[in-house]
Length: 188
Image (cartoon, rainbow, N blue to C red; front, side):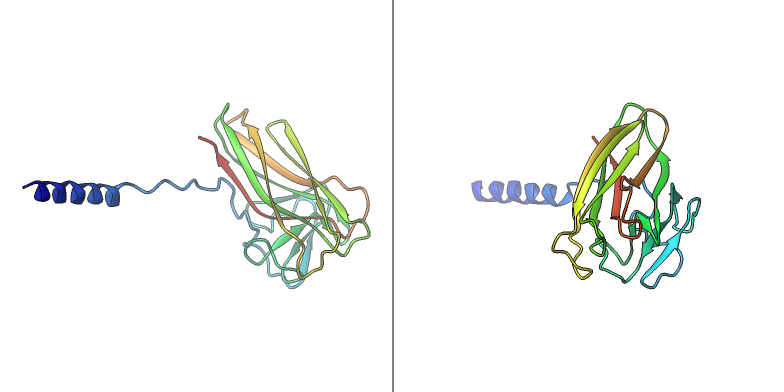
């Protein structure tokens, strides 16, 4: 009798464990965070301020390059060089938020190894907050630009927030900070 009872308990626990709902994966609030949707690209394609050719994104400040096969992307097949050919630019996107809630931004950052300056600095802003990050191209090549995953947090002030990534460089106009695999998730 005890073994039948024990078997039933173990079976019930195993069934309950299998039936437990999987944790809900949060959805990226950004559209096209890896820049995969947009115009055809070979090595790279220069885009000017105001361009909305990359789905979900608008080019700001100055020219950028949408990079295809010139180096491996951090995720997918495309990335951005925030310095065009030439230009010192940025990109932005607006998305729905809940005021007072904290959001975590993650992105992959690297530095174009072709430039004269090895350290490249990028700025990020959202909801009146800003962050600054640096990537180093020392000993890097176009076969391995050295992507690094980076995170930053902000607290929403409005129902809609615009995030912008932009170069903080004033020189090396064709070889800037590289951006890919961008996501924004609401924290619990």
